[in-house]
Length: 179
Image 1 (cartoon, rainbow, N blue to C red):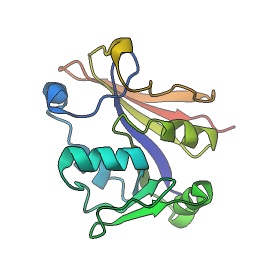
Image 2 (cartoon, one colour):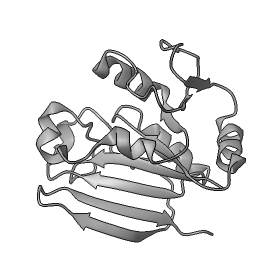
Image 3 (cartoon, rainbow, N blue to C red):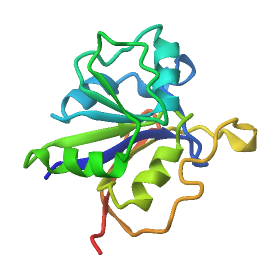
């Protein structure tokens, strides 16, 4: 069974941070695409994140990775890329993806816009691991985004490992405690 892992960047106060030029000094040694390619499986994102990532990059940057977009409508502007929209019964589709192969990792990312995907995955007990990359910045209540874990149902997580980088970035890995 594949593992579904959230890979997300956050501020110290829990707001989503997109790897943008303002934050590049903290992330210069972190290559998002190489992390995703290690997953040996597809990428899952929300429709909002698909639009945001496409706009920020003036195109779809993950052309080597099968991407599934959870959305209420098919708004694919990258028909040449391996992008599939899940518009009906995403829980069943994700369960199927998770059980297709015996190993590997399916990554879930958020650009900071579509953070509702986190609560959706947690609510449906689909998320197995969280890889949180915390940048040493504080965004405060002026942030236009919701907190990463706003409206998330309570569940128990165990810290698997953590690494503090010289830049001040803290990488933490959590694994869901099976109930």
